[in-house]
Length: 205
Image (cartoon, rainbow, N blue to C red; front, side, top):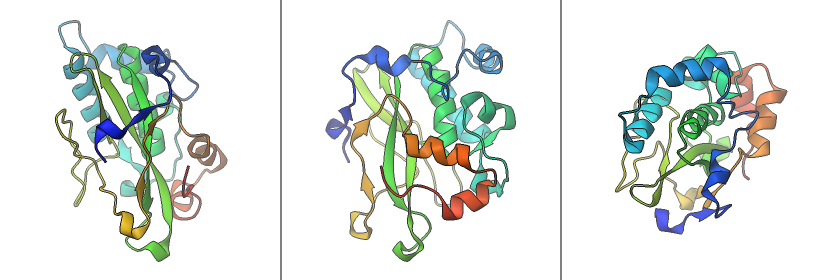
């Protein structure tokens, strides 16, 4: 999907700067990390890239490490340095919104594993508005591994996953202000992340 097809839930950019329970950038731990990641000499693009690469590379994806802990709020993701895409997108949004960089939530419906018979899941990524380019870009901070090579690019997308509509996968076009309630509820309702990932992730918006 080309970004020109993306639809903003709100036409007010300030709505994409809101602090939320899950995007808690006033938390002292988040504030401390902000001091480390950002400085006044950085451009918005440099800040966005630094934050994105930090969340992508330094926060483990729970499935990749076969973790047990379920994290949700940005501060918990930062504290424990792990989370699935739902959680990692909360942290990236918190870091960027703290810097007055509008950040929203986007979704894909993907096969959970390698075949449709194994089910589908809702996948979360972020959209970031770069004022200097007057455009939204989508970024996927789930974390790279063999077969996954998401990058920070402005003129093209390099996401973690491409959508295969022939297999029932899809890109949802809306850039949301808040995380989808289904994604937050599943994080709050489970304590074993591997069990949750295998059997309880929402399949669609």
